[in-house]
Image 1 (cartoon, rainbow, N blue to C red):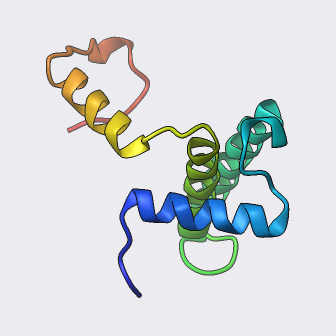
Image 2: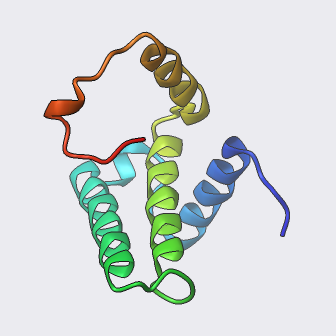
Length: 108
């Protein structure tokens, strides 16, 4: 399978959104609905992982892919360069300190 950049994936997703009638402009979508759909895909990924369904239909990997696809769709609709935003966040986090005692996640 060909590897695509985030920008290429976003364009591919927007083209499919136009073709399927999912909206490709801000006035063509309901942002609250799109955010709720992203949330539902993340919840489905969690459930798949919890049930040890990693690969295949409705598996952890597929559900994470669905979530990313929905996020990239929303970014494309609003012209957000998500790759650039991710790099900015990584840079911002370099100097950030976390209070591990207040976080609810495991870390090395």
